[in-house]
Length: 307
Image 1 (cartoon, rainbow, N blue to C red):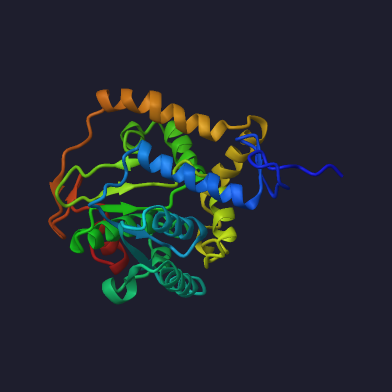
Image 2 (cartoon, rainbow, N blue to C red; image 1 turned 90 degrees about the vertical axis):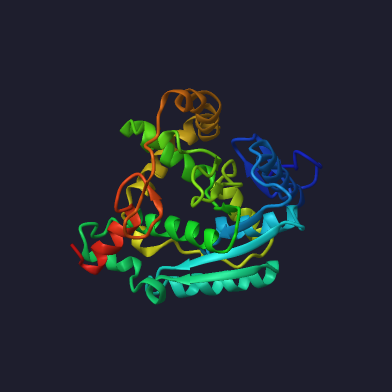
């Protein structure tokens, strides 16, 4: 059987990256991955020397890879790992354990926020509301709000999340189908602060595939929860990802092309023509929002059974 050789050094290849038309050995893959992340951070001007970065770590492979690679590439950067435990039975406890182990290995300070202890709610509580089994949306709303709140209260200047290319293209695809222009203009590698109470969000892994993040986490023996969230099994996003994977199989590099076209060609046009709604202050929590009460407070009241 013909042995495939590394496209970089000529040694035996262990990894194939179809979209890049490359075969890589383990060492060259790690070098390739880290160089690509560094280039992404530089290209989109994500991080400055004086930044204090809160890295959102769920316990999964993507955020594990993110925390590890940021610490390795930027050893002098102020980094704190942040984990939000939403108390999903048989899942969240192990995610928090993996998070604590990872933070110890990487050598960064850590913050854990437990929604049951702090708010008196859990993600499964949304199953008793109109959301029923479609609870990824409210769970995401809660996490985004809390990450910003934690960053604001602790003086962080950036919040880094582990969104990968597959995540981004799935959302992008859905927004195009829905014609949601206002959300399309918000989908970008860097979401700059548009209000004193909103911290800048960055996505250093936005050009890395889910496969690349998994391989990087495995090659560096990082602890992470392998099983996906049990409450997301019926989510439409998974079905859209399967569809996009089929397209990628027929059109190599499709995901990278779609994302690149959005950022380079479509986003600049949208930025000129789309006016985003102005902020109002949420009467319940005081945070800026396009509506009053804000999405976070509406969902909290829903779970608590308040009118």
